[in-house]
Length: 83
Image (spheres, rainbow, N blue to C red):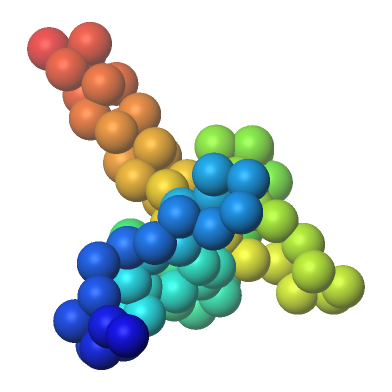
């Protein structure tokens, strides 16, 4: 049996990748704000403009970390295209 603290990422049934125990599968809006270093208003503006994807569980809106990464990559691409 492996130690959960030292185990590598696992693959769940259906091919869904489960990241390490320290990395959450979903981020709250506040956590997304902290990662992007912007205000809640700015994150909600990005969501409303459909630049940042979210998922909803009941009334909670959450961000998938890979969508944050994709958003930052889009920003980098836009910056490269503008030069």
